[in-house]
Length: 220
Image 1 (cartoon, helix red, strand yellow):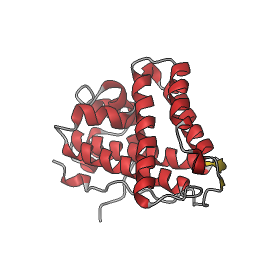
Image 2: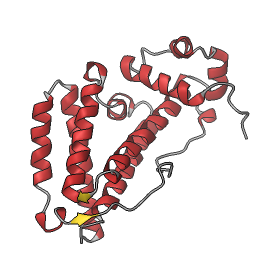
Image 3: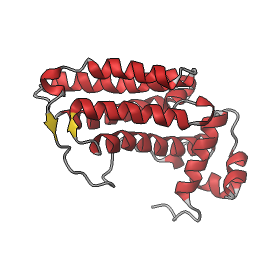
Image 4: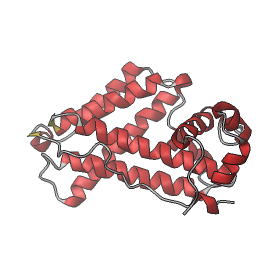
């Protein structure tokens, strides 16, 4: 069992993720993170081994936050599945608009840029996407009398559209256009079940979302 961190690890990882997101992996150094957080280089290297280990720890935390974002929006939206999906797309569009320089999504950006070089990035991206599909399926199941295969396909489609909205935002697509795209996808949900009223199952706010676990100390 490792020694307790002598710094605010959540704050450090959030700051590191923001730097990697804005500057990219190659142009961000451990020294940059040290200056931004006030945590010494030695403490960062002792905790994460190297820049790659630091990035993966920050990336994992970011991915967990994104999966939780999807879950929380869906759980907070009562009514039909269509209403929940509409709320999810709207929340994603608003979130995109709030990002400086329309920088997209750290997870999607990193898969494209680092997936071939750092296999763990692609693995974590895939498992996070699967986690998002699972929480969407849980919400649809409240009203959708679908077999597992159909439920999985609809959930995957909703997540793909959400990720597509993020990518469109990154290339400067106006929010109005994003809402139009989202409306088409939301409207395409089958009325036979999408408009039935359901209540999301209660879930603890701190309930874990399984994505991926790694021993970052081994990443040397």
